[in-house]
Image (tube, rainbow, N blue to C red; front, side, top):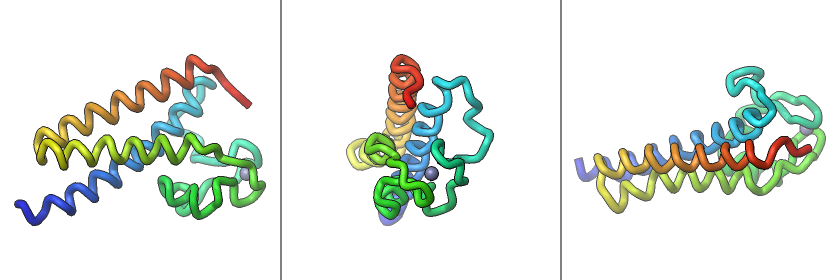
Length: 128
Ligand SMILES: [Zn+2]
């Protein structure tokens, strides 16, 4: 069991990063009254559908230099920060609390983080 823990931590870090990616999507769409399911993720400026590289949390932002690959519109630094924070909130409690309590704490923390980010986005309103 002990040998597996580093793999579990890396796996949950990745889960957290992708949850962060979904938090960004929700924070972008919910204030506009849009569905968080459809359409597929696309650039707001040029409409280009995002591919696998664009959708990689944090790494996609760095690979694209923080801009849309087609129209070069800046994505904004908040997106990778929100993703990285979600990843750490899921992974770090495992290190401190162990597998069971760490996983439970991580799920709770990332849910709170998501709620806080989306609530902030709704309060701020749609910004073009
Ligand atoms: Zn674009």
